[in-house]
Amino acid sequence: MKTTSHSEYLKLKSVYIKSAENAFVSQNELNKQWKELNYLAQPDFEVAIKEYRAFEKLLKASKIDLKYFPEDNSVKIDSIYCRDASIATDFGMILCNMGKAGRINEPKSHREEYLKCNISILGEIRFPGTLEGGDVAWLDEKTLAVGHTYRTNEDGINQLKQLLEANGIELIVVDLPHYKGKEDVFHLMSILSPVDKDLAVVYSPLIPIKFRNQLLERGFQLIEVPDNEFESMGCNVLAIAPRQCIMVDGNPKTLSRLKKAGCKVEIYKGEEISVKGGGGPTCLTRPLLRSY
Image (cartoon, rainbow, N blue to C red; front, side, top):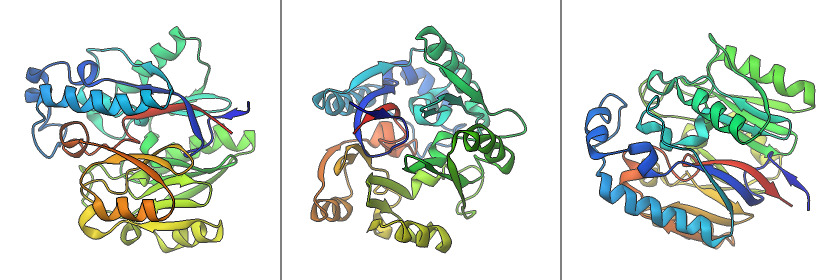
C-alpha cells in the first residue's frame, strides 16, 4: 500500500488530534483566554467535550489511526487547532513559526511529541519568518499551495521553499486579501478545501483570480460556498477519503452541493470547538499519512 503525506483527500490513515480536555483544560482556562485569543464568544467546556467526542467518533468510525497531542501548560486553548503548528511531508515534519503571538509555543510542543514518537523532522521555520499550517494545502503530490497572509509572511514562505523545492516540490504562492485584518483567523484553508483530485470546496469572493484560474486549469471542479455559509465554516471541509468528508453542522447549501457532486458527508455540531474559535475540522487535525 502506497502512502503519502502530500494529499488533502486520499484515504486518511493516521492523524494527530488534540482533545478538548487537553487543549481547553478547564472552564477557568477558557474564561481567561478566549478574549485575548479573539474568539467570537466564550466556549462552554462541558459542551465542548461532548462536541469533540462526537467529532472524534467520526474519525474512529473510519478506522483512522488516531494519535494524541498531550496537555501542555506552555500552550493555550488554540492548540486544539493542531494543523497549524506543523506540516507533514514525505521527507519529515516541518515545524512552523506561528504568526499569532498567543500560539508561539505550539511548534515546540509538537517537536517534543514527534521526537518522543521517533517521527522525523525535516526542518523548522525560524524568525523573522512566520508560517502556519492552515495556510498550506496540497493540490497534488508534487504541488503545495501556500497562502501569503498575516499569519504566513514572505520570509516564512521562502524558508519553506528552501526545504521543499530541493525535494522536487513546487510551491504556488497565493496572495490573500486583508479581509478583516491582522487579528482575524484567515488562512488559505479558510477558502479552499480539496476533497478529491478534481474537486474542491471554495469561497470564490476571497480567492485571487490567478489562483482560482490555476485550480480550474488543473481540472478542479469548484463547489462554491454561499456568502451566508462562509462565516459558519462551510468552506472548512475535511476529506477522510476521496469525496468522503466531515464538516461543521449549519451549512445546508454547501452540504447539498457536496452531495450533488457525489460526496458522502458526515456533520458534527461544532459551535464550541469550531465556530467560536474559527477552526473547522481541517484545523482540528494534523494529518500524517494518507493511502492510495
